[in-house]
Length: 130
Image 1 (tube, rainbow, N blue to C red):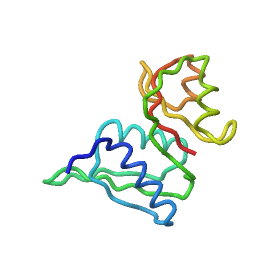
Image 2: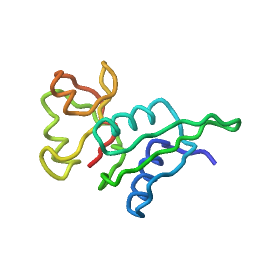
Image 3: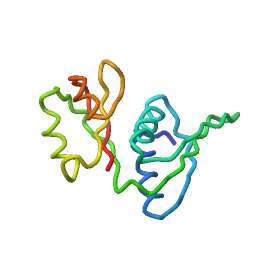
């Protein structure tokens, strides 16, 4: 069975396992985008470590949860955001000011919206986490 959006599936699994109180889980969904999103969430202290295990059938990701995530999800459609309009999307996707992150794909790579604001970059919204 093919998956339409692997990033959405991984973030959904994170929500499910966080609510269940689990500390780690494994997934076969594995791509550069997923790894970059996980590394940004790890830098912002929403996730613990994650590691990739090489397997003959495909690589496996083991993700450690630390219990800091209330909700995470993919933003569809991928809205374009200018450097002046971050606040509009913060109000739409995050519950309070300075609480949570939006992950943005910019010409300089993927980053949290706070870093993109500092660098005065626009881009496409990928997902949110708080």
